[in-house]
Image (cartoon, rainbow over all chains, first blue to last red; front, side, top):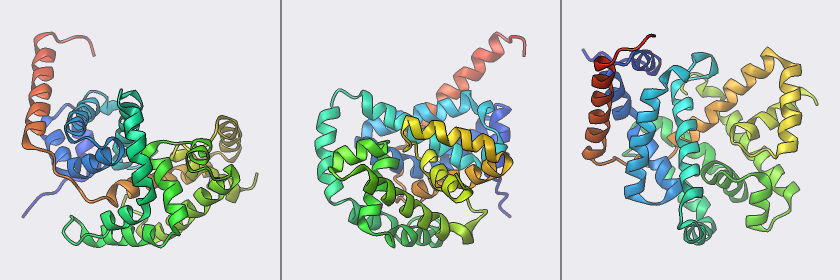
Length: 191
Length: 86
């Protein structure tokens, strides 16, 4: 019978410097994290380098994780998001990325939905449910959340980027996030 | 600020979408609501995982993991070679 460690157990072992635990955590989440990095920086080779750096940081600073702050995945995703956005901002090709972003943003809601509902991905039921929750949002709310989460933009930056009033952006973010949070109430212990 | 308003701000805060002036207000409210606010933040942090898990995974090349594990092994060897005080 397969013995599957929880994320919390793996983090505990990584804190004790067990490389096997890091290897297992890598196998579990590297695909999701790479998808996230790619969504932010749009460069395959750079994404692989960054993924390696993030797992190395996780290895070196695992002691900074505390279960009181939430599940390990949330901590890892937050770290990945921060490092990816840092990388995006530092890149010399930032201006060109912005041009691509402009093009992608115009198609963003559809891209997100397309990306989320995929029967081949792991834990398909959960992912499809998440995809459905997000897809139920009006496209304008999806766009605002997408720019905040995947591009690290503040409300003011989103307003400037989309040329939409700040108050409207704030409302879109608040409503969209509340709907997602409400939709997740049946999955309390999944994340 | 009532707690529902705090919840709205907390979701924006975990996304890093609050402006500096809002962040100050948020931190004051967080201190005011205490443990209830921390429970709320723990829930809100799940949003980050949700956005990541909603993406279709992209498998990195095997070399990425091989390089990572080589670095990890090297760091362990260095540590063994020069054990410092805990």
